[in-house]
Length: 407
Image (tube, rainbow, N blue to C red; front, side):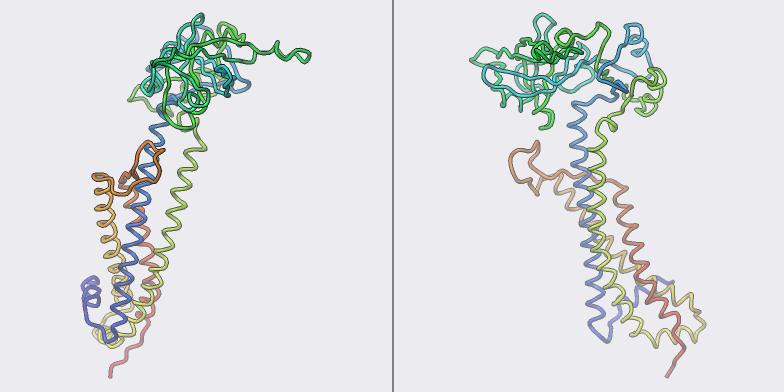
């Protein structure tokens, strides 16, 4: 019943044309703000999925690192028991350290990852190898797969007319520091460039992957000494649950991290940016709220005689309050539905035809990615509903307190 009154008041011709204009402006602003919020949240969802997919190609589902220091000792029996834990699909042992990579007169600093033969089962790097082949060789004849940024910085060649580059890797020896002869604390070994991977600029400019036994020999690691363990989970496994059981298994000397915990700053930054944009766009809805207050206040003045008639027919304050609250919610609903429909149409067109392009040619994709989520629609609709209710309350309350006055 209340919506019936509200709808009639919305459609009815007003004595002052400004009331109609303000009402439609309010609806338009709400529709615009609603569409903007959904579009921006959908774009953030699209970029979030893109970034996560890129990082998923490099970071493992679970990573075990030492709680203190850079390395830890784990004997073969413990490794075998670790592999048999529920939810684990594959496991790779890692020896990692910063190194100086030299190619004749060119050189660059890299994060050198020594990996075993199971690394291709836990990482997406082999699938992202775009030149040459993913081949880490052996301890005696090591191969190295470098990021595309390192390839450019050091002039690395892996195939083609020229022979593959033979690179020199200079690594620090574990526990050997000589003040009189600093060179005694460094080791030097040669590796053949076998492949180049391209994932994301952060990894492409920093990482090189080679044989774990070569790295351990150069750095003087013990046979059972490692820098980390990277684990691939079964698709049905819950990361948090597996993390808890592994933490109980390895004890307090080792730290077990999920993919999220390996990139906490990245994920937190994406979440903060998303909510910051949402808050900024909510200010547009607050501007619409002032328009709504103006429109409803003028409508109350316009309908003073109608309010008195309703009161004389037995309508109490609660009924008058609900009628004008319904009027405000109606304005908000029309604007929200229009904005949602507009956002849906734009998102579907963007997904289908890639209408809005990214500027520059250094991106993996050349258009803004979008991903629609039901939670975003519910959040935006709830925000519009709350603001519309608060904006309607004051004019509706004023209307409900009007005294009966019939002339």
